[in-house]
Length: 394
Image (cartoon, rainbow, N blue to C red; front, top):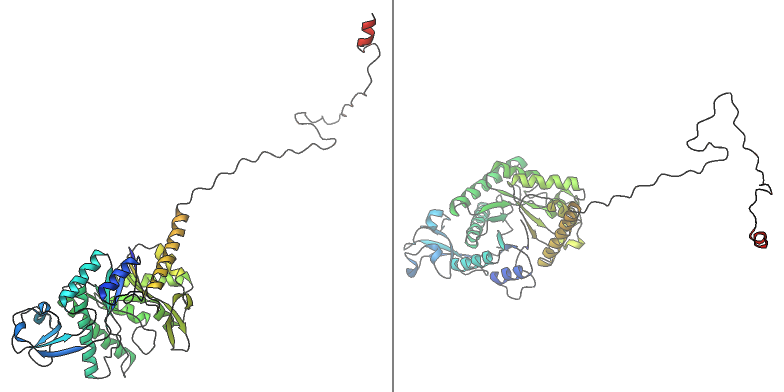
């Protein structure tokens, strides 16, 4: 199965709630949506008296994501499943798209009823090398995004891994791999295997996320899903992916690394300098979806295509249209009726030339002269039949 959808609430959506966005996605004929968890507003406080004895997920009008005994509450999976106690510290989120976990459950039910597959993108800015505070905040935000994704029924917690460290590139990659391993383990334990960490590439050379790094990370750590963000890879490798053979090899690499399913981001992209680019609408970008649509039309795996274009749902519907055209061409070519047989061509009759032997007559024997035709003689007078006039006179 293949799904198409926007990265966020559609621009044409009149209501700005998450459920309004899911309904609009369905009415537009799309079947996927990447929820954007961008703005984070955490608040740590003491458990209130009326909250004592309740599970963190049961507290109304609160998105509690951390519970602990100290001021620095811990995102512990066991604590999140334990009733709240007095004098505990909890951290809650203020998110405009949901007020509590019961609200998330209603949104999850709506998405399933409308057959809209949800994923969630964690906050874009992460930094694991700047400072201890920045590292801690980045880890916690990805964990919070995983909890929200679990509440929404979203299977992927999509994120970047940020800039390389100040040391060697190999040391930075090794340390980021350890961070990703810990996050994937935490997600598996906390969400009971319902949410996986999805790492996408970056178009900036100073940020972790080349093709080789993403694929190697997914091969090393079980459960991590590589995201095929084609405009970012095009910007990083400075290529347009016009060659079908080259693009097919890239798609096969990501399908193999993700164990059969492909999660794909697409938009237009414009290159400026060696490291400068920007995302654009698809029709204005340097890369085209037509070649990729031909490859996806001949696939045997599930695909989710997310439009990260500035036009969001408009380009999402355009991507779907290009895919349907490619699928129609493939079906027409495969099921085309056989060509009609051409009628047999009659043998070409060559008129005999002067002096040629008629067909069927044996050639003359050697040493003999061909017999000459007798001269034409007019019939004699006596042999002519009597005319009707003379007969009548008799």
